[in-house]
Image (cartoon, rainbow, N blue to C red; front, side):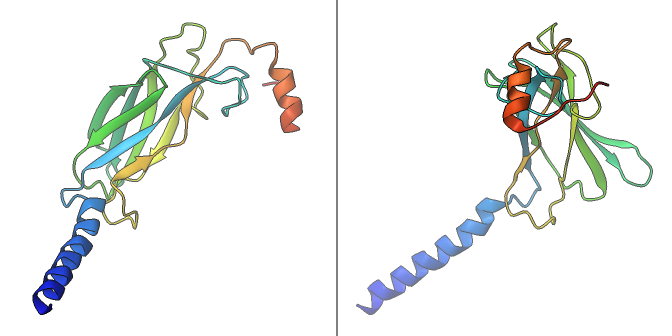
Length: 164
């Protein structure tokens, strides 16, 4: 009986140690992910009419906070659902990291707008985030002209658009 209890306590101790080890890699490996969309209503945020872009190119860049030198550049493409996932090695504690849209596969939706074309992400090992995954806000491109049924979406949201 005592041997069984000791074995059970040993297994529980090993499992307790495995959880934190799985949550964050000691090397500081991260998985940065998010989605790229087409702003079909030209309102600078996703709506139910937004389309997620398959094959959009994104780039993650990190720059040192003090001297602004580039320390990291990683590129990738979105899958069929407009989702990207970038693998990053190392701790980037003293750096500003940002994901930017680079190119759109849709010629009707390729207008850059600084308000939706990038997302800042923390890649610091000791940020208090226990997971190695970092999720970014949706980023995207604006459609050249808004869809005709965007007015319905604005009404549903109680939103009154203004002209730029």
